[in-house]
Length: 401
Image 1 (cartoon, one colour):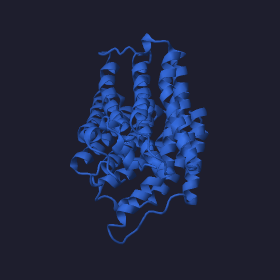
Image 2: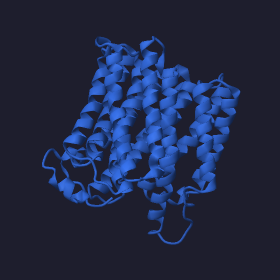
Image 3: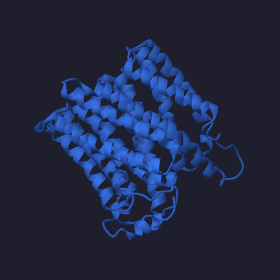
Image 4: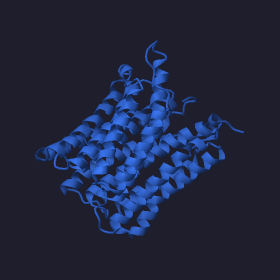
């Protein structure tokens, strides 16, 4: 049987389809930046995209179900072969799946010219095909531990379907059930997968630094309680987004995840931004839960839609960018360290999140703050494409993680 490296070497087509992270990380970074470039003039009325979605709903959908689905695909198509011991999906099968993802972006962008059902089918086709492919690999590899990832991926697809239904019904989908289901699935993925990789990568780096405190191993009792509580909080938030019970549970969950994060020795990682950013990205999970809980209990202080960006752009945006940069470095044979350029894209995401949050606190300055947030976001993901694009498009995949 061929090895992973032999299978990749056997592919003689475009290098971008030589491994799962390549097309999806490159496209995710490019789309995150390009969608923001389009959305800023859409929001001000200077650009009319032929989409049936209102500008805010299109913006939310394309981040959550366009960008995020691409990052998850790049991550899982690269990680699942390591989890299962099976060969990776490369070449034309990978190119076909990527083409289905791209077709979804085109269909949503031109949805005003197409029947809503057709748009939904084309857009959902990628998540369905992707989930079936990952499910097949997990089952054939008897990797039962990671079936939970397939469940969360399926929930993300359900959220996308509900989003399309709400938009087609004339509702404001950006504040509907579909968005909450999809965002909740994304936060649960970070809680589960981030809860594995953050302490693991931190430990690997710290053991080379000499003696000192190391992260508590994952899957301890506290981790199980924190993840279980997050499941409950998400279920309440999806079904009862304005209830006092939901706000209280979200704040409790935020405290639990702060304690969980504190056990991972993040204070020792300041010397390496590539590791530190994982802790900062995860920090937005409890901060988002606390802020969202507070906004539900005290809506006069700040709108829940504003603090929601601590989860959306903060936790999902920064954590996915951190994973993309680390995986791209490792799988293209580069040292696992972040210099000034890579560190700058991390800082830009944090600036974007804080500016967007500030726009909700000071609505009188919202126009300026939106511009700051959008510009920083474009700089972050455009920067990723500029830094890593040449490696993703041309450099042969490394033979190590």
